[in-house]
Image (cartoon, rainbow, N blue to C red):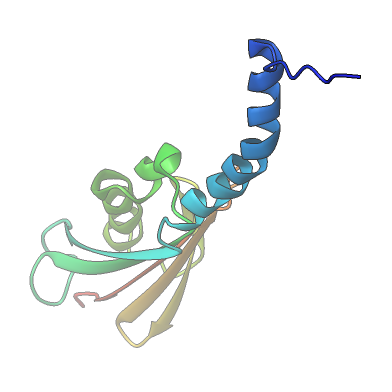
Length: 138
């Protein structure tokens, strides 16, 4: 009896190669996702209406973004953050408010208000914590 060895057909060879390499590709895909930063911090200087603050017209805001995804990058853009800050400061808010999807809670001591705002993504794991404080003019 003789054995004749034949090379696998191209379709079979492709299937065998995919079966051998496929798990490696699948394992590499999550690693690429993990490579993105778990959190980023941004600082914004936001100008507010004249006469609202005890001194100056600028409020410094800090945004900590956890699990940032590029599809929702507008959530922590300068424009969005500025709108949230301006609503609270220009309105001299001393009670919780909502702006641009952020739920903001102020803590008031004397004429100083410290705000903590949070935004949680519904379809994405991205969360943002925004903090800023201001001393109101009397």
